[in-house]
Image (cartoon, rainbow over all chains, first blue to last red):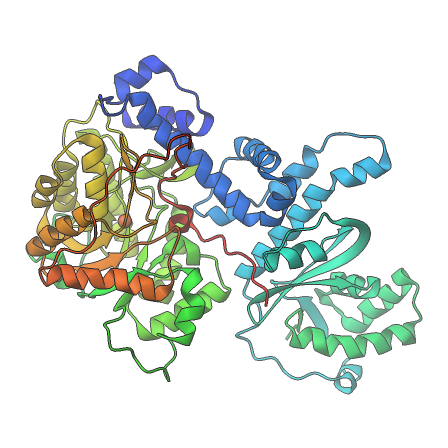
Length: 268
Length: 333
Ligand SMILES: [Fe+2]
């Protein structure tokens, strides 16, 4: 007879890795005419697989719709086999999926083909940011002070930080129509090749997706909670090869709106 | 509550030391919008028919979640008693107790101030891997010693009694030398913990293992029962699965009547975690519990419905995902 620890290790292997020694099964589990020991164990093994798969499909629903069930499930099952859950919450289950897709992407030499291969990992990253944005603190319950262009100009030392519900990232594809279709429960189009910067943010507890101008992306990426905003402005002007005055004009119009929408916040 | 510490059960019934909450439902995100416009809208005229008295939350769905779910929880707490129901304590696992999890639970307890907290008599993982399922224990003296020691430890950390639920099970171990109800009696007696009697789980497990559900319920330590769960399972012919995706069947209502006759006014909670209906439909189902207590027997008998010829049996998953975690879908307007 297995002791409790041995029994749980054995049961875990049977459910998680589907490794089952039939002799040990019959020594350990009661089988009846109604249902054999193997069928009983199968309920747990199948439940494990389907439950976690359902969770992955829900978290990466746009990718699931685009790849179709069999391809998505095979990626997800490979991921779950390589990275079984080690957290008390299923929220952590899919955390490593975008990186897993990137790490297991087949090697190809043709640049166009290579870019196509990156679509799943980039869409997965976008969907992960959306789920992270849902759970962040956000700014909905914070008191947001009205900000305007003239106030900003007199505060060159102000420091901004991205809200914990905002995520900026660069992608090779135009995912906006895909996410719009997902949210409206319409057929999801295949994303077209169109390199761009995207922003996921939350406003009024709703998750939004927005295309960013290069200067907006660079500025948000520079909002590290430490640098003065006009310092960031100068770096962005260099990086994007924009006239400093022109960029300043753009920023003093856009920043108050970005604060009001909860994309960035002023650090006290 | 702080006076209740681990150790042998005191003479006073635990249910008498805790509030009797009436009839409640699980708080699920698909109902947030309806709740905001109705039950949580203070300007809204309360409807004539009895509504929901309290809510149960899945603790893990609200730990480390500071978004809309937390806002809703705070709104609900302003108006209703809340109970925290966990699925990841893994009280029966041979792995060490997960202190990080228990600390997280404590933070949520301090925030929510629940009427009580509950989890399951089961284990959920081993060797650091969480299966996110409620797995069965062998009912042996060694398991009992292990679980008693851990329940005492958790109760000491949290400074409150744990309320533990009987699980739905699909297999039994040959090493078991006591019945589930004997195990529960000993566990409650030695630790002073409470029991969340899931009437549907008794129905499911009794069918799967061929024992008498009424005998099971009659044999429990009734003075330790502080809450009951009701739910609808799926009949798969050779076995039943705890799916929480349908109405409560008549057989479960009958067992509920028996349980309530043994533990009068015990707090009742309806679980519905997949194919969740609109809130008013959920409330209608909950009101059948009130009807059952007035002597009527609601619901229809659950019978096996074989799939139409040529069709495969539908896939049935135990312990649905909503029970574990609502992976909330990003909403847009
Ligand atoms: Fe339950």
